[in-house]
Image (cartoon, rainbow, N blue to C red; front, side, top):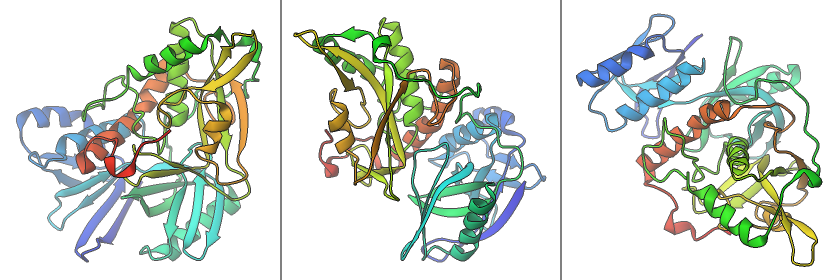
Length: 363
């Protein structure tokens, strides 16, 4: 698949954009070691030059490697000389929700929590809106690209698109049973929260590691939750999962100092939940969500952090990977998590490591 566009930035400088899979990514490591510019070769034999001395060159290589290893195209912006100016990660899927308003169109994809905004002022709005409406009507897949928080490209997705967003075993939902959860004390719950923070990504080079990018709350919640559930079982604790879903055409919105915009919007959010034994012998549930909270919280408090009216809480067994079904091994989840690690590295390049003091503190 190859798409070539003419794209104008905010300063009206003409740039070329290419949306295609890259065929020679395995050779890029050797070219990086040589300190020379790398030639990106696309599936249609088109080329672009990745400069060796650009501050983002290493991050772009990691982005390209991740996309290629997961059978996904790259969105590459070049100048008129063919030099790479930006590498972005398009995401694909079917449309779950689509709502129009005076400012544009708000939509979400079935397998992802993010809410996307296509602004009416965006160049090419009418064409992208037509793609959205057609995909919604015929239940076909689309490929979208986001830059600086806004949608800049939407096109049909017709070829193979292999991602690690879903579990490979297409099993149904896992019922929730509180009796299966391991009862632990409140003191143990507090220490467990701190233990979940131990693998938190704390450097600006998290790509390729096994750290958990809690400081990228905008996406990847289902992967973070799955990895944490595996870690909890290493401590002989069986958790569950709690899901918060938006309803009635609203979106979930949470204020956080881990995002440069100080807030994130979702169509759903998920985190592990544990069974807490009280001194009187009764049990309560508490949510472990370091991406949104600084301590364990009750399900109701967790919901209130993101609720804009009409949200709904649902529970599942910890094995359920996706919002509807699916399973994933720890290895599969760790591989999928690298997308958020790359996004964290990009955020650190752009704005520095979160949290951001301008936002205040989350819960």
